[in-house]
Length: 301
Image 1: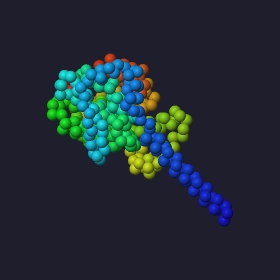
Image 2: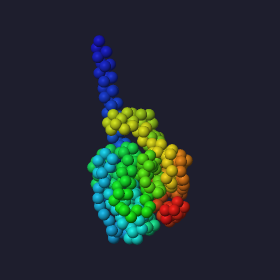
Image 3: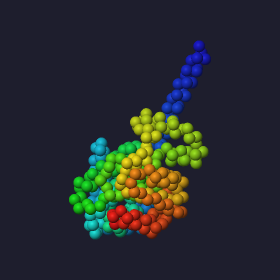
Image 4: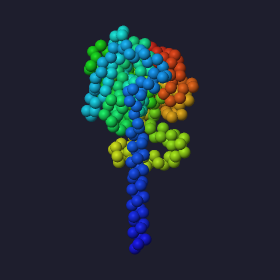
């Protein structure tokens, strides 16, 4: 009887440790440390000239998303007032300031830029990340708000980096009223990114099953359901996929797979020598030429 009691206690302890591990892994994956606006500006300014930002006419406001969650938004008005707009989504742990390197390009092309803090980032209320599920609905809500807020729109597009690209691609399942999409270094599904990271770190991949259980238990979202690629099967909005050829964090195959999956027109470009989210920093002229030529081909230039 004594041995049975010890075995039961041991089983309970192991179960508790397994549960703690599952919840911790889920929290680690879905609630990474976010940058402040000042930290993001410092990082950006050390890598390219951000002085253009200081003199821009801008307007700050908030947008209530599909569930009432408030997104902090800033419009950077193009001096030309051309009626062309683009909504730019930044990457994981970054904030709206991380979108400035793309805003600089679009402003030169005559586009006003809607930059914002993704859910749980920047000035927004702290919350967990669902790698496109909720964030894609936020993008769709921003499209609706932008259409309603600005009555001079002649073209409206979406541009996203990393998590922002995944969120942008996921938004396509909601048929947003946009003319084009640019997805830079996005992931087709989050599990393949996590698997690669675990392998590189020498950690057992089976821990992702534990993390998935913890995510469902703690946040009510499964990691295996975070699949932007599934939003592309009936998509007819043109998509430009760009990926750093040397990206070892989100492998270029993610963009390749998504380009092959979308129903409508797509382009796929790899930037040689660029790692994750580095393409526009490593080769800004080539990047600008690719985006400009794409927009011209789809009559959005």
